Length: 319
Image (cartoon, rainbow, N blue to C red; front, top):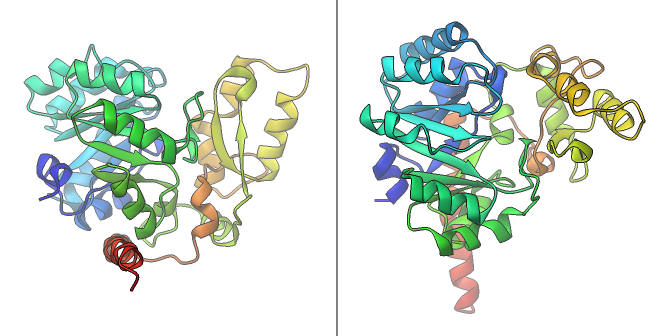
């Protein structure tokens, strides 16, 4: 059995990426029911808001799911940790900060811990701290990214060479060919986010899904470089405003942080208002051309993975 599937009790080595305050029970449960590891992103939710989604998710699936805590983003880290332990959440994903201080508490509660990293050094530190697996995220990914801007293709093999625990590749993966590619690089599986937006169970604005369906290979943009807060979003009127602000004199980290907060994320993703809110989108956006169920998507990805590996084998054998 795939090591990742064995550790986390899942059928397919596919994780859902955390989606901050637009996380919801419908999509999380659908991913877990389809054989992957569904994930709720805590974002800046209050413990009460997060608990409601946890309870809703438990009502829709008995299979394992995770909660992601962005350590330097959430103002409620300690309260959320207590909440996850209270509800026996099987997996916690830690990002945007040092996981070292929290791992023992989760392990003492029989929870698995995943750390999201963007460099070899951070992967090694996370392994030394005792995490069960690493999500290594490349620059192609949607949303908040590492300032190092390493691509998935280069990041994964370097991390795989330096750690012994399973590595999950994230960024630039939207179909079975991408899943096969990262497995060939040594990853044990993949984490996907943008591709899950365009699924039937995802309760986001239809305008968001339509934007993904019409996207080309050049329809995402990076904002926040000037303040070392790198974020990849889809090109929209709001994204244009962010770029104009970034190139103006009236620009600061505080202002940028406010305008890319979860408030404006929800306006774009949930309300479909691209004038007053943004929508995250990875570089795989141009590959999306349908809106399947989550089960159809995951089944198809695994089928495509085997087909891609078979094609590569045929090429090597001159068939």
